[in-house]
Image (cartoon, rainbow over all chains, first blue to last red; front, side, top):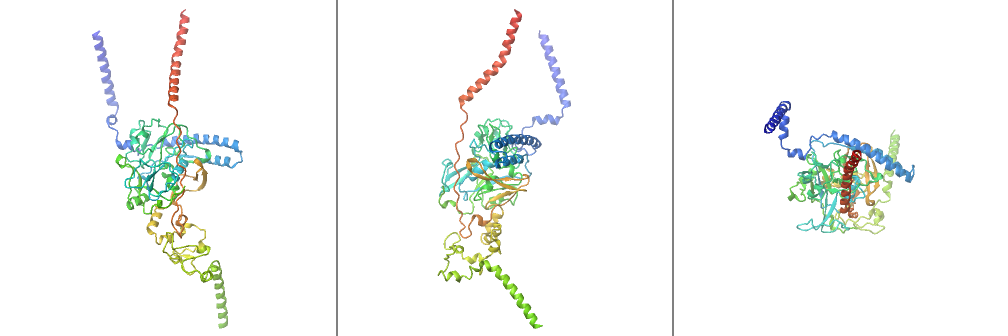
Length: 336
Length: 220
């Protein structure tokens, strides 16, 4: 009995030795060493050499899927309003125009935004433009941008800020629009168990909606409350659909994923500015490339200086705030 | 010979005079100033006609005089070289040179896309007004190709700031964010999960039981 056990053990040992020897000879040493290398932080945070062909493929599939869905919805609309109606024609044209892009980050670009708090009048036009531009579900009331009304005093307290004011701008109030800060050290990226969110090389923190499992760790980790979880399928009417889409950005979301501001990735990657920057009636928002010495954002940083929210959290945000040269508008009376 | 020359000169003079008359025809009714000022007994900065409703003793441009921007005597030409009469309803960005004369810092900011509205432009652009979320309207950019966008200043100075009183009046705020729909009830989730587990267990167990029963019958 003992002999048999010993013999079996020896057999197993010989098999293991031969197997590992074959492995040692057959597999390259470098490849083996790669397994032992610890994961680099840079690799974790920025996927510089991420293969965008994967996303391009997925974007193509998504585009076909969306077009099919859109045509179905348009057909429904046509049945309701009649084939010749303006809505029907417009919906069909909008469906044809749908483009899902997978534009990769340009090399040597680092996006940042700055908001002039002297100019901001708290009108919330940015929040609404964001909803429209990013195809957010109209049924979920998710707004990626929130505008805080904070009392203007020596130590302004974010905790006592107002979200639901109806009169603006009031004297002695600073309006602070907040959204995703696109941090350099994003805590949300670090806690994600499936690596569904990461920081791109141009500074945009993106979410891969297909990979997100909806665990909401990132929502708990974000110090700015910038991430939102959709509890139901977002409903977007066809006539309000923005046909300019990016697979990592404003493509209509599947239910039960986390979504957030992407600096309007579908616009900025192709040379535009985010919708909130465009729509701001007072021009309080400035957007640009930090690495370009002639960009608007560099001009703001060099001339006026900027600060960030919750700098003590060590997140190093890329959404800056500054007090510009103009007189605060708040001296005038508020409007309803 | 001399007579002919004189006649020629006279004709030339007449032609040029008539041309000048056409050019100033639109301003004729406003000029000379005494036409109104004497009739209305106005003195100094106070003006009464529609064109003259500007009061430079108040407002953000307080202390300036008309001639700081409008070149006398016709007043239709601005200091930057733009003529208002010929410009009428053109691109307002042409008038920026007037403002840039004094507000150089702000103008630099404006050119560098720091001050003022910015907008994106693309090829074959159509702007569509969409009324969407909570009935708030939004201008949607519909382009042929979304891969080549560029950013430009959206408006000229005078489109936001009235030149005669450049204070910007704040807009009314849009409605505050509404409450988000509550997440599904916890008990519903719990019962659903329990139901799924039980039914899957049934799916696994039932074939075994059926098989056993079959076997038992066969055995008998």
